[in-house]
Image 1 (tube, rainbow, N blue to C red):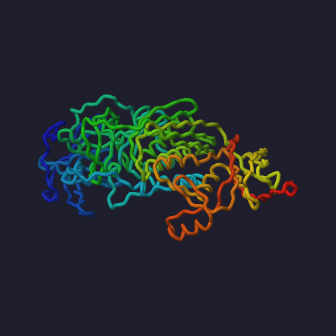
Image 2: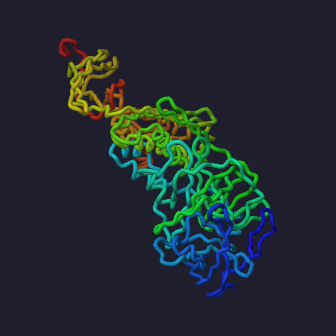
Image 3: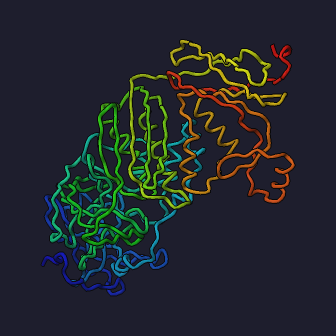
Length: 577
């Protein structure tokens, strides 16, 4: 007897784990090859837990010979398990390299309240958000990959590992996620097969327990969906997975019908190849006992455009504080790979615009060199989007995200060998030429002369000249004069202080006490700074140097290096010359 319940059917009767004795027989429903709905005999082995408050698992063994080679299959998450015609719960847990197809069932009596659980989105990515200067510095020092992974996908805790989420992808450049993107996917338990075509048609009437569905993460020129199985349908309500999708709390993820193509057996983790159909509704709750959603609900998506060497791609992504950054980074890298830029040293220039509905635009321009330049660029895209999405202030709606990428073969990079001012003693109001000697990565040298004006009102005494590449200057400037945003608009404005590593910065600094305000550093008399420090202590950020002059110039290559030179200001013309 097939126990599938048609969409919009009455609620299935629930059986409590305490009513099920070891050795009890039941059935599990799931879609297999070609969309065939199969009824799998199971044996209840017993109940484990609670291993956490209100959390227990019912262990079952699948009594079907086809699972001897596959074990529990990724994509089966949510497959309903029935005992005596009543719904016990969702198959949700399995163990790699297991010699028997033993799985863990999340009781449906826990899942049924998912839609009524206290609201609120998870805030882990916001709480752990690095400062913008930390993100830039970690890229300069080769640590951005690790920072992104630990920030956006921390290692999951807990004694039980949920079944992997099967991922279906279709579109240009898609494939196995590489580098930091792949590590984030691994931590989230995502497994993917070859690119699969999307199917625009959908049939809500065919949505029933055991049917495969997908949470649609990206659509447009790329379709990216995470697959699982429907546990129960009641009216316009849908329960699935039996374990967290992301653990995101309140979410907005399009829910689509999915079609199983075939099963790939694997000793590590067998999984379903599937296609993704049109949207049926939305997943709105994502918590430890599974996901819950409603049919007929539309989900607002974030438009993302990526242009690589003149070829443009258009996508839409879900908006989630930890998913959107990594998804946009993935789309940037995939678009670059679609243009054939996958191997060898290259130079990648990236321009990012994040446009908000209130009119603010955050801009980031940077150039990356090396064999992994594409992944570096994608990492900075993810870092920028993640920094703003995880603001402690209210974040407005995103109008669109635009990424422009150009790539050239080879390394267009150089380093500053020396910086020499034409005079070490300068007068107020004069222009000072600074001679630069640079060396390319192949060893050839070239020179540039930049000029900076000495302020006409500068007092006599020591004046420091800093010569630095743009990214080194950015890290130094933000550390010496930290930002104190008082609004989301201030956080957007902070991106204006980021300078491309293709630029050289000449800056004049004078020792001058000050404090950090919301609009930037402010110079104050030392006595007043001391009084404020005494009154506010650690709540006051003070500065020791003020920038009294600055110029920057774009160079033909990425530049690395920084120097601090000491000048002397004298107003007596004879002594200066």
